Image (cartoon, rainbow, N blue to C red; front, side, top):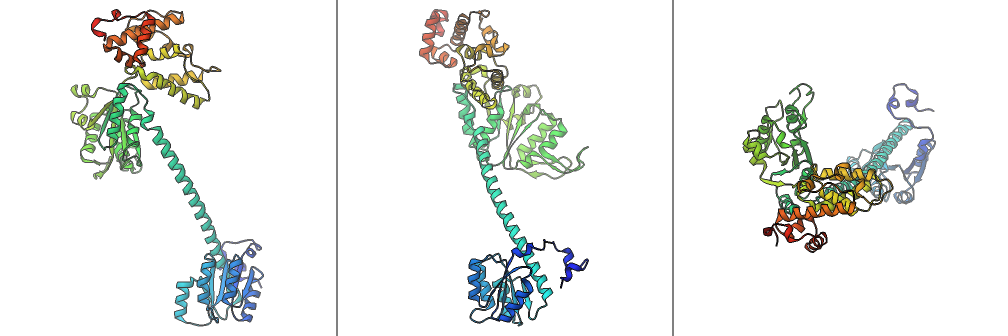
Length: 506
């Protein structure tokens, strides 16, 4: 006799998921009853579709659960020695995922409540039962079992994925922290050592920081280093170039907007100050802000509140602000282009990054670092620099500062071919030619005899350093060499104290 739900259009089974006819047999059903006739009847009813195991006592049923993977348990409510409720309670310990059903011919409310609470039964089957109704209940119970099984697998997979993502996020965070640590701000000379001292001190505070310096000196890198060394390191760091957007769009980007606030505002949008709550916002090129935006930023600094475009409501934010500029803001304030009150709000701590031409002693260290980075990125193995190449790098004026040096070394590595060392002829025409620094100290035209040309450049650099510093010790520090090396080099080049003004020698 066929199931009515399989033959009745729109019936109960029409809404149930279907399974291939032979797939149900993979499920094992355990029937526990002390009456042999009931066991036989249940087995005959279900054996065509499922694997049925029978037990005459609760103890026998527990033994079967120890060795078999059972999907559904059907137990009689009233049995000697171990009742159905007691059996189902103990069955949970052995197979918590199995669906539990109970046969009952009594309306014992206390037993029913206990079975629901302790045995966690799926459904009662009253005696006597209708075979077709029993099959339908069993089928639905096993569908619930399958869903539970699938959910458990999905939960396990999700847990594994979350754990993997957690490990990856931890790795990425550590990589970011490493990339933007103070270790990545390279410099051994006195100028950068003073910068490092300031960075380390301000990182332990929540003070607003203004970072000044020419384009390419590493203002963004310094801001990130402060953030990742401070108490907000686990929160977000967001940067916005204030000169990249017109006023309305910049205001929307920073403070957000309400739908309809301006043409194209089709939905509400949170600004960076809200998105970055508890984190750090880095306002690059803050000197490019219009007067109107300067007023709005001042309000945020004073009140820690933002008001989205088109909204009458303000929202509290907890954001650390760092700003950077390549302009002389003091001059901008004096000439009325930058608000004085905003300037003093931004420069609670001011850090000025020196241009590369003022810390030439760091060029060899930076050049080797950028060479290593470019080697790794491009897949080359250049090991270092010839003396002539390094002297050309040190002598160059570097108008683009550290960024220009980095780009020069990446270009050198990209075009190196089979070379294993950077030589002077591999440098760009601008670097190989007579540099502005050399011209400023009266260097002669380039002598095509390499050794003579290098010696002439060394002599002019040494004299320039001595004249600027007034001390051999300081001149050696400026040139990035020991004082003894400077003295030996002066002797080899035929330079004496007489070549320097008397008051400048020590």
